[in-house]
Length: 528
Ligand SMILES: NC(=O)C1=CN([C@@H]2O[C@H](COP(=O)(O)OP(=O)(O)OC[C@H]3O[C@@H](n4cnc5c(N)ncnc54)[C@H](O)[C@@H]3O)[C@@H](O)[C@H]2O)C=CC1
Ligand SMILES: O=C(O)CCC(=O)C(=O)O
Image 1 (cartoon, rainbow, N blue to C red):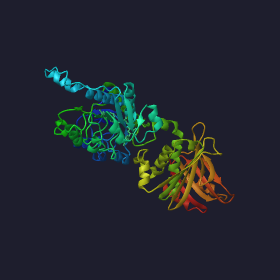
Image 2: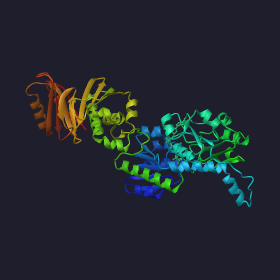
Image 3: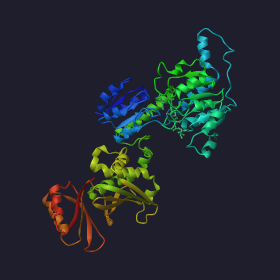
Image 4: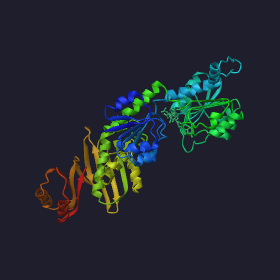
């Protein structure tokens, strides 16, 4: 029975999708040890930001295939460990964009008009109109740090509200910034010039403590800072001190270095100018439905053997790409399997030659599929699209990609793998026909033409009368049925290759007998 654990509160729409394919256990609030103890039972795990999926947890997983994060940030998942274990990590990159952007805008407005303070005072019996005079956003300068999905929506709304928007994002071009009506600046200038600064970048080793007391001191004393991105980007002690010393006028914070925020956090002791929310950026009914559906559908698909839309740890391999490249990926995997089984040694280098149509597609998925095929004989079902590149790297396989847009021989181009091992080199190539069928078109540069089948016998032998008949008789003796045969050679009576499609695998004793025949240079049993 396929089982999925849901360990954070997830909208029912997502649970309904998961129950189409799995038994769904909802266990919210598990301690790290409790999660470790039960994770072994599950094929899928669905979380929000509350569950810490540490390397210890992933190490205890026995059959986990997918971790689905109903949201954007995957900083609560040890993605490198998941990748090493071949566990797919998926998220919902766009499901809560609007919710998070609107929360940041709400925080700016709440700060400018003292709404939380005025509200508190009203419920305490007060009526203070002088104390809570605020500022308008109109004509003020907003600095947006991180101009991705959320940052660009904030910029759009801010522009519409009459703000001047400047931005800092090292990965955004001037053209893109112009489209967003954002003037790019460096980070120090942005902090200096802005009346409001809002953060919309990920937490990474580079962005941790990015906003410290030095940067805060660059801000205007009237400036306000909003963080609805990730905790840890702002140094919380520095922010508390900056507010206490009137270095800046205010801040609104939704996310914290450690969540839930500790009771004795210096932020909780700040007396004025600070608005805090408990990581509510994505907490709208709409966003929670969006992310639950988006991620549950991906978990369902992966458990059914289909690709995921937003895989975090197989970049460049979206469901759309996998769908459009289906036969090409199948060919890449098949050639990888084939070359690994005829190589016979420890492969040290693999050249992946993409020609014609193959060179026009993104190469990364095709290379990953090749490596998956190449390592399947050694690793069985432990190898998949998630960990294939990492496993190949770990085994010291040097992968070289060669692209050639021309391919005069085959209308749809061709893919060739050249492997180099301690036992010498081998080469296989193939193509995809118009109807999506696969064809193997050469082995060790001998032209050949066959449709790959589950079991095959491959030989390199002297091209001389009687040798093929002898192999046929031996197969008959072992009751191995031949489905089809293909022979390729370059010189008459020189060396030739033969591929037999057979109905059953070749027993090792039979392979030994074939290898001991006169004129046989190599024989390999291949299973795809
Ligand atoms: N408070 C909440 O509940 C939510 C928080 N988030 C967080 O919001 C942040 C932004 O999310 P999205 O816009 O969806 O991501 P995104 O990936 O679309 O955009 C992030 C942007 O940050 C930029 N960036 C990366 N490093 C940078 C640096 N050192 N300086 C400046 N810019 C840098 C990237 O180039 C990218 O354009 C993420 O940290 C995400 O986890 C997202 C949803 C809800
Ligand atoms: O799941 C949540 O509520 C947090 C959302 C969030 O921070 C994210 O999507 O990155």
